[in-house]
Amino acid sequence: MTLLITWPESGPETELRRTSDPSEIKRELARLGLRFDRWPLRDEETVLAAYREEIDVLVAAEGFATVDVVALHPDDSPDWPERAAAARAKFLQEHVHEDDDEVRFFADGAGVFYLHLDGHVHAVLCEGGDLLGVPRGTRHWFDMGSRPSFTAVRFFHLDDGWVADFTGDPIADRFPDFAAIAAERSACP
Ligand SMILES: [Fe+2]
Image 1 (cartoon, rainbow, N blue to C red):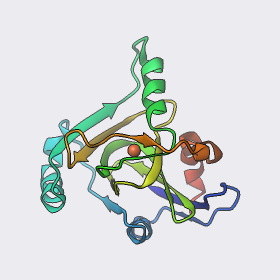
Image 2: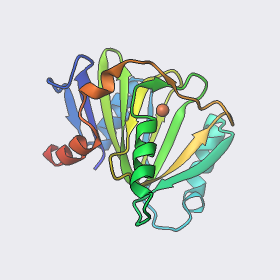
Image 3: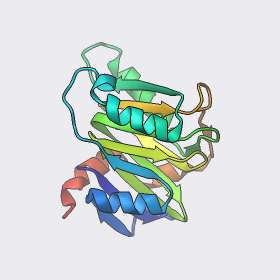
Image 4: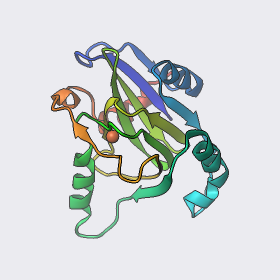
């Protein structure tokens, strides 16, 4: 279940909003200038082929130059824990992408985007079927958890523009991580 939680940027002691209603999530994120949508889940092997129609519409609307798929799922290889930890650590602290948006469609699995906007932190737990577009320049971080498991389609305007500039603000350390939010989602009405 997709979930949006909003706190003041000072910390997660006060919860200002918690909703798992996709239309409310879409409305709130649109108010903040973010794209959020739900695409129907498809169980086909090749994600790009399965979602070709929606992808083509979005690419035409937004002028994306490149579309690819990133997938990470637990396996039995000895280096999995190390690969998982490295992948998680990469975007776990607050950063911005100055030159391109961060647009992701989750075909399966889950991850939490944290958006630091307007004096608030908005956590969006994305799951299979969720499309989220974070505009360039938005302060955010991403937690895929200690056992990352997801398949995501990525959309880029520039071939080399998607670089993370870290803000140096340790704000991410103050807020619940992926595991806490995934465990809490059953508390939704
Ligand atoms: Fe990012």
